Length: 123
Image (cartoon, rainbow, N blue to C red; front, side, top):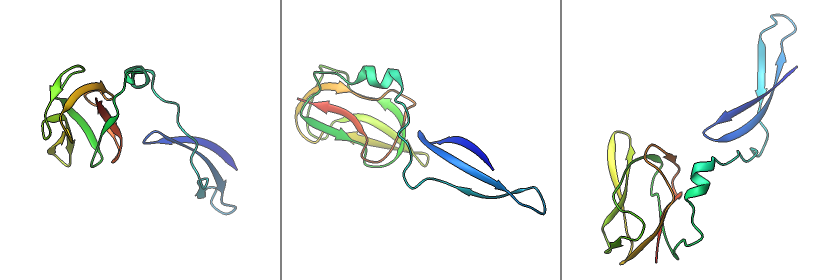
């Protein structure tokens, strides 16, 4: 048996591979029921501000951050694009749910995000 640690999309898995008796080739891989939390990248943690606003802007779909349309301190109206995501070669604007001031931008261009990930906050 051999133990490996594998990281997939930021999730860390401990995998045990058992060698077959007749061929010597790997037979099965077992993943744990719950993955260990992967350590967070320092730049992403640094962008999360103590002054984060009360209105969350979250990703509606998984994708990659293509463009950031707003900046911290900028006033936005309901429906204004704050972040543009790219998913399946389509650009998807993520808009402000209501009028406010951008309190924090929690992602960078090129970041991969899951559906529901916090992208920015408003005051």
